[in-house]
Length: 462
Image 1 (cartoon, rainbow, N blue to C red):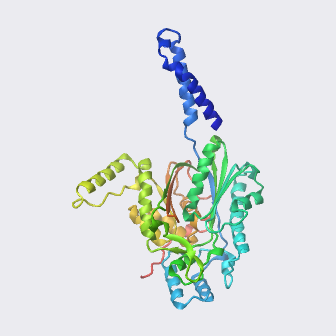
Image 2: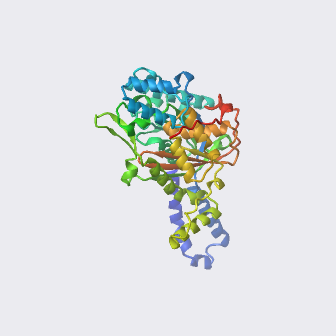
């Protein structure tokens, strides 16, 4: 493709002087027909050179943990006691758990079920293999894709980064080609899923006619915190096991079988501000025990990053009426600061039919829901995913899309907005357009219990 563009530019440069000399046409050296034919050729070359490459989402699979890996509240309490937390810290952990929005069906790997939990590297690697090997096998076999047909592989796991990499583990297991373009991302937090999609998209546009496999997960087993810093204890009760495998294509022939096409992907990084940079931070406590601290300013940072993100996304997706109302409110605010009301929040339900907000916790969903002026039904997939599966980090957005599909609510032409947040601090948005009605009878991670949802999530007094 790069060679083709270079050849096109050479052709254009070679004929440019030809058209600059208009005297040739006036003297009759060049006929009008020849001129029009040359112009048409230029336009055709420009079209093929600079046209947008469409990225299709063929399908995706989310990991479904077995029921014996569920973690009821009583099990969590027992583990906290075994890990020698003092009573104050145990009470704090249980209070966070009760208000987290996570139910008793969310699962953790077998190593965490041991008493005391086993955080060895070997078991962490087994967790990765259990999740990723299963979903990759299910996705490729479902569509009868030979592993050697995969051209691009992008994997992400934030806190577990072994050598060889997770991408290499997949290549070794499934026998991918030796010239596969593989990338492994780490340290990118819960937003890494959409970062991986963005990277795969860029590679697909450079390497046309290709298939890309994207893998998103977080390893729970090696990342439990056993110290007494409250800001680090929160992560112990929020994260659960899970993962997603996504198959993307830039091949035209895949359009009829694709489920979605990628319309926009907007990335925002607010790491230049110390408050944002430190809001999710892996470090050692005063006793040199490593953990991930979640600062009190996290929700404020997330809301601010979202506002910055939608400043770029809004003009791409909102109807002009909403953009004008927003622009007018900003002008009024600057001119009549005291008298004017708050700046108008655009109605994003005029741009999207479905919302997938990162299931980072009940508080995160509440803040984003309020910031975007959404109703409870708009964030239903996020709340139900959090309740059943917990915070599965970078893969949570795909469990949410699974929920909408299992409910039979995603129709042809519908637009889906995925919103991810992650350490750094990052806010990323992806916009997908559905290409065909989704069939709720097709098996996915929600199929076995979708008839029981939505459920009423218990609310505890503060």
